[in-house]
Image (cartoon, rainbow, N blue to C red; front, side):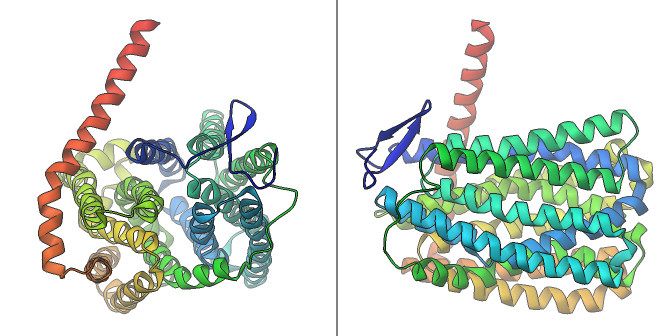
Length: 462
């Protein structure tokens, strides 16, 4: 294989690609569906943990898990999205190997930062957790960052098969391990942590195997400066990190002000709302590479994705809020009845957060990550102030209302910056989004109908 030819991996062979991926709509739909499948596979795990650990145990687990996710958001330094941006712009295999080399170096830096955090957590006895459990969560954080770098490399080149192999291997082992542990009554905070890091190690191994087989891991690299990747990562880092903090820090604040039981009650409510973000997150990851490749009708493209966000998140959020009173006690157990009202408020926050996440993806695709970061900072500051005021007064419900206000402020700010990048006013962009909502609805229905038809044909063929 020539080192300066673009490649595509097909059925175990490395072949030259004479053109960039075609069928952008189909590729975007496939990328979205791959990521949403992974998200759905992960949903039963929270249910298993809640029914096994009860509110207090679940609260303890969530404090550790949220600490790991916050460490991930800091240690990645924005490199995963910068890697997606760089791999999308890479023209040759030499360039792509250079991107992979940069990604590998950033993994080592992330591992060092997370290790320092783990040492601090263990030495201070944070949250009263066993040191071995803390190191398991640290291992999960390290491998998560590394796997995210590999996935985002493939996201940039729109290699859906590789993304599916990496992500589904992690989700499959994670779910099957928890199911087996629950069946033998061995599911606990420590065993769940071991299963989680094992699944992430498998995912990372699959990713590196794919890179090696496709000749991206070793060999000559381009002499182009890596600084553009570093500069992009530092621009995107504040906004993405703060967006993650806005999602996860509420439970940490509750843990400092209230008991682990309250964290568990809030965690179940948050899991209901976060099940909606499991839809919006794949949409955001799909938006960036599609918008980055869009050279015409960028206004229409942006408006369609905003419209799709309203539909994809708004309808399920309304349904979840309506059935929460029946759903939560039925699925999680009667001990989580207190989560119902909190979940209904967080469903409102999920809609605003989905619009903000979509706008963030659009800004990344348009090469304006700094504006998204600024908007995220505004929303995060308001959320922190409100957490400090409302959690001591209203408990878990105060944290929920703080999230609603903060995510709304963030999404409005991001929508304003998107409209500025597109050269239109915020009001005009809102009207354009409303006009494109029927188009977005039709596109979603076409994909859904196509999937149903394929499923029926496969069933009949058997």
